[in-house]
Length: 356
Ligand code: SAH
Image (cartoon, rainbow, N blue to C red):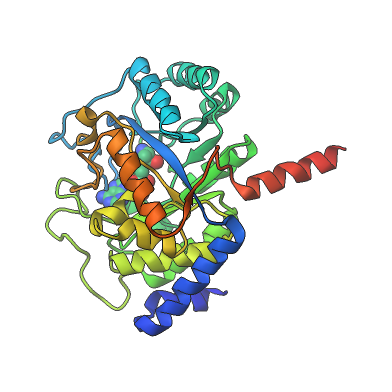
């Protein structure tokens, strides 16, 4: 599939022809990653952030939210809960919180590894290489860092640097790969200024980076951000990608076609714009992962990257039950164990063959 094919699919409106895209993505998912849906327990452990991302409600100068950081004990309690609920992975996610020091997070990673068999995924924004190396050394397995858009001009507009250094998430993904992490990335669909051409470039970049995990969700306008203020949706034009549910499925399906072995979540943002069916449709159009929320309910509504987030008042148990039911209702099974990246396993066994 070349760039023109990708653009054609992104612009396809005919429901009959789109059925072919859904079918192809579902078939590819079935062949390469099978019927299992892996559950990753999400712990949103701090909403404190030093950055000024134009889209995100956690941006430093949003004074409308109460800030929190969970204690080490609270995080470990969530990890224990993940084990009790049968999850194989926890994802530790936060804003770029300066008080999350290298040592503090190392200690937490080690403690989780010492008491549980869980895979640990980090999603804590842009950090220095020595910190990434130390966390890997402490036992972290995977890292999620969406590049958000591959268009450098648009990226700088929505994601201003801190200090003099330009942020370069693609370079950081390369560093993470070299350090031995499984790497995940992705984009928001329909951010203001995103064209079909640039979204097609994003999808091609997924393949070039040979990602282990790909997260895509619709951009949801947050009224307390520069991008979400005033114009809740980008003005319609023939170039602008709309931030719709349908467009998100197209990107999910295309991601599956260009990266057949990747782990692809059916995201909370998708469930937010279609509470009734978003999760299931995502799973039937390319996705094979869901990320139930383990964050204690008292903090959950404060992790407001966008408004109206799905599952905000549910306890971890309720979230697990709801998602398991949804997965089984579409004839899929819940994956047991860590659900490591198949492409990562392939790499590792190739490395072992090199050695022997
Ligand atoms: N600080 C970390 C984690 C951010 S939250 C980081 O920057 O990597 C994870 C993802 O949520 C972001 O990468 C972004 O793609 C998505 N997100 C943030 N604000 C959003 C919004 N308003 N609508 C939809 N998705 C959003």
